[in-house]
Image (tube, rainbow, N blue to C red; front, side):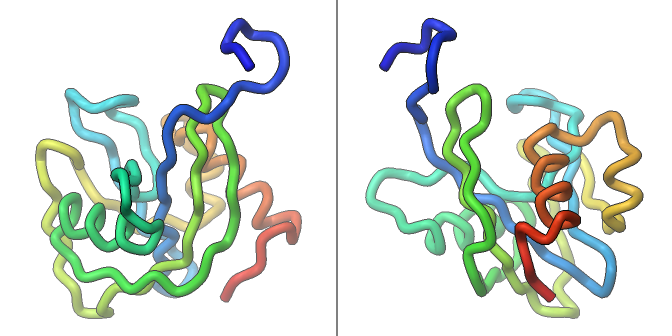
Length: 143
């Protein structure tokens, strides 16, 4: 397959996305200056390194980005972005008393927002908007 714009693009890399909830609020990050899609809001996560499982990538990424211990619970969804990134969405737990320590090289700020608040934001990455739509439609179920 080619990336000529015809047909389906082959994923060129894989990533993981952490869905972390406290009550009705989701943990969202604003991407730091100097990273792809800087200034945009998204669920935390990142690329899967060679030889790394999705769960290992989640644990590493949340430690690097936010300084927290993550416990991957269950795989919720999978989606290939229009730019060819194969994303695995996971329900992830962090300790309820965890202090988030954003790595300024990757994260400008952390926010706890409801789905309704997220859906109203113009600065939410489109793949995150698609996840929320799939969740609202019942395609994705989690508590």
